[in-house]
Length: 236
Image 1 (tube, helix red, strand yellow):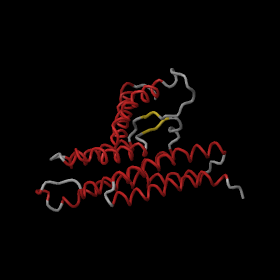
Image 2: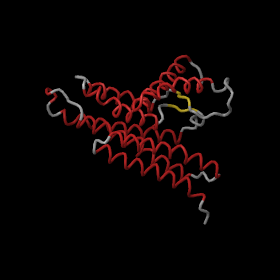
Image 3: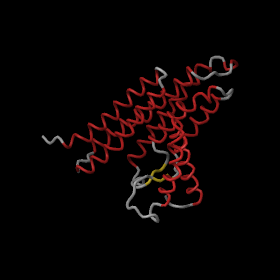
């Protein structure tokens, strides 16, 4: 039995394992560690497909495993991060009464719409070189970065809860939207063919100095470019 055909699936399992640990860290309000394991999961997610193509062992089983792992690492894990943050770190107005205990559960809309996004991706033949809607890894990095790097700022706001709830609704929509978003797959290294990608990368470099907030800022920049191109009618 050939071992090499199992290598990509083993890497996918590492992605899934990282996502499970991220969920545990989120429930324990260890948001920095949760973010670290989400990032680690994203690294494994990047390499499993690459290794499968290099070894020539892509399979339908691998595709299904990848989606299942992604829904844990990039759906349930960030949803759990936001849930724990709303449940333990954010003060809701006292007039909300019983709704103060219910509102944090809105965070799990992130997991629901991430599953819809992944299912849509699996059957959408348009998404071979670009994305339609926000990719789940980008969404997960956005949320883990916001809570880890911007948690103190949100806790200090009277309407911090409203900002988080509004973002949950907006990003849930973006996951399943019909907005084209460019991928970072380079067919060649020419400027003309990859102008948008080069501009994105060059402008993203200074954002790395934002520390934990870097992914938050970079994903917003990614969305800004994608939406601007969409409104302009430019193909990504």
